[in-house]
Length: 492
Image (cartoon, rainbow, N blue to C red; front, top):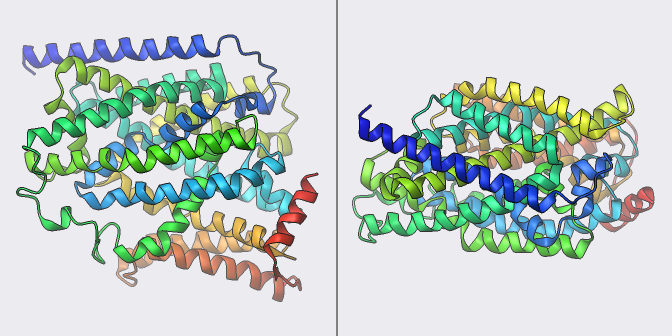
């Protein structure tokens, strides 16, 4: 490394650490007067005191981490914007359909809703286990890897594992010290910085290629109509994509937890709708345009595209600020997932199977420390992936559609037992695992994974209904209003 390169890296590191410290200080000043009682609502739902701005900021940044900025730009094609555009619809469904349901139920975790609906705890335990499987083995290590990769490619020349460990340890400190409120406040402050500089990067990137994004770029990287072998075939926008968005935004604990932390339904809906506006107006551009510009400038460089472009178009002092904002985003995203994972473990496992929780703060600290160690240890697994975002979306199918099937059956049908819902979820998990790890590598099935998610969802629902009818002898009735009324009565 040259002396100049070393000097630039030191400037970026110094600026990054300084801005990270400032964000931490502002977060502390915001939450320091809050009183805590150590209850589950205090630790995992911010005491029900998040206003709409922090709900919007937390939801936005929980989704907008380096998984998206690095992963989507790493595909270096405009087509990936559909993930964010369709996310707008998913947020509308959360605001107007699921938020009222969660608040009327008075739940801390989405899995409690399933127990209320089915009248049995087995389905709640199973779905919680699947959520934890995804968080511990996929979301947490993938987030640390992509964050560390971005910081390294943006010019902070430290070993990948050192950067990942730094991000993980600081995230754990936030989770231990402030619970969801600290995480949500930090996400909001960091999110403002990330969005502002990300938009600036889009402008500077376009300026670097004279505002001609198409020059020298193959047509398949510019089209919004995906071919059958593309990451998002166009027809999947009307099939599997909508169900993926419903799952992610409406039944996924790290997201719904933020919406459930407001004082009331109206405040929660305002926050979700504000996040939806940001999602449709700002996010699509910042997650695809830099990647295409990077293709023009550097060629096909996969997940290194975003970090390298940032290093090229931003001056060292500003890239250091952006690195700090990204670091804060990764820290906040990781802390949010950790807080959600700890909440699921505490409420759905520890209290049910181990012992009553005397202090959720103490339990949170212990479990968070264990999650931090496992997440850092798993970072090298994701370093071998060609595209982090495509890998994540494929792995999500293992749990996303089976879990969504339990919500669909529970909210749309009456007369279905918990045991039947469990069979549906297990079927879906096994079915999608067979597709991903057996049939697809062998070439036995050529169906796109987004299409296969629809098949997984439908067959999981059918498996639950069939088991309920032919094995348990029950009679399911399609009656959404009656099912909802049953659930509300059970909650009361």
